[in-house]
Length: 588
Image 1 (cartoon, rainbow, N blue to C red):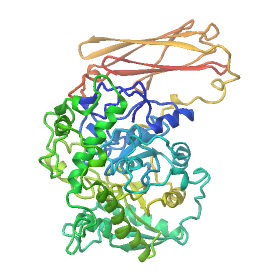
Image 2 (image 1 turned 135 degrees about the horizontal axis):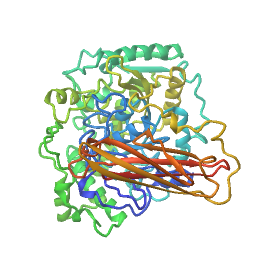
Image 3 (image 1 turned 90 degrees about the vertical axis):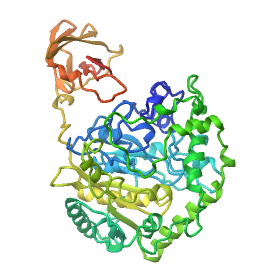
Image 4 (image 1 turned 90 degrees about the horizontal axis):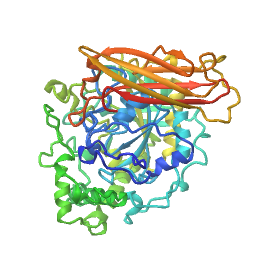
């Protein structure tokens, strides 16, 4: 996401210093509504994967350090998933091309919404594969999701940077034509009563027809059985079904015929889509951003787009000849304009036709209101990037990408994922995904909302527990009427190295004559731990000794080690408040 004045690196060393010249559509909408942008979250280079390490490293699981916080092959919004689950912010914004929004939501007990084409403008987001890319909000509850959608689902009069609204081969409705007047006022209770939901047998260990059936973890199946009982208790009928939209797309069994086999999509479309279309979209993104250092794709250092860290195992996508560095080489030979890309019109129409034939008509034929499924079959081990045994599990179907693989995004099928529970054996969450017809988004939100409301399966991540010091209690902390003069504070921290330890000296100064030790509430934390501060008038000092290793760990081979974060919050009885943070002992 572009946030004006901040870098828009997309996790890539090639774009580490690329600065956004304006806000993405969603960011601008949120700012206008009063939201405070806390920060940018981690991702692999260009979102072209899941848990591969990018210029800033990667996010880790707040539930279990031994497991991945997202699917290894497609979970690029791992930073948003971890940050939202750990309550670093009120909500997060991910993006998805395959399962990069759903997978981190599943692994972090979050609500995730992958919209139909054109519902949420992706203008100002780095593209990966424009036919698939969608904005994916992450929240800790459905009420939070609905409140967020009331802000970010809106018509965007500017189309550049949002492929589906730029192309003219397939009509795309405006958001205002189908969004509810208010998401927050959508009725949730009782919505599932009388609904007929299909659960694909391939995702619950009951598929006997596939060439290589998906292996689903026993603890996931146990949670699914509970979810099925919950759905039935809410009045839904749950029936086991095949899923031709996936079987045909992947040709996973005898008799399955892909969209190319049936002539729905030209055979050459896939190559034109991944090369010509993506190159055009990347180049257009850079040209629209107009950074003087990187004005277009031809100016980029190609080998730095997605370099592999030393010691990392090769990815297992099966496309040995594919290298994002070649995007730059081809761009230097000339970028094909969108309207001149071969097979593009037939390909786009074919994607829409495939969705109708293999999914929407199938739903109607079987009398189904939606399909429901465990969001993932398993969770990969955290060392899957360097351990062959772990990689074998992490790259297994159902685990490498969230269930459904490429199908939902490529065909424009909306989904909503909510927490299904936490696995008893490994302490990792897994989600429950609802999928339905294009532009039935509001119905899916209501189905998932009814289930979430009734079950409340989300658990708090044990590695990031609530901090008592983050709560202002009633009484002394309670604000009165705010004063007229803004409260100003100055926070500094210096690190002194001494062998195996580092000493951090912290100073906080409050620029308000009435803010002495008897009236000011002062809370200072170092890396989340409370720091005792000595007061002398409006000046507070504290010292903390930490192991030197605190500032010696490298999260990325392309950057230095991270320092310690010192935060300070000051609140006065008259309601004035101020906060500050500094980084010491390493990079921020």
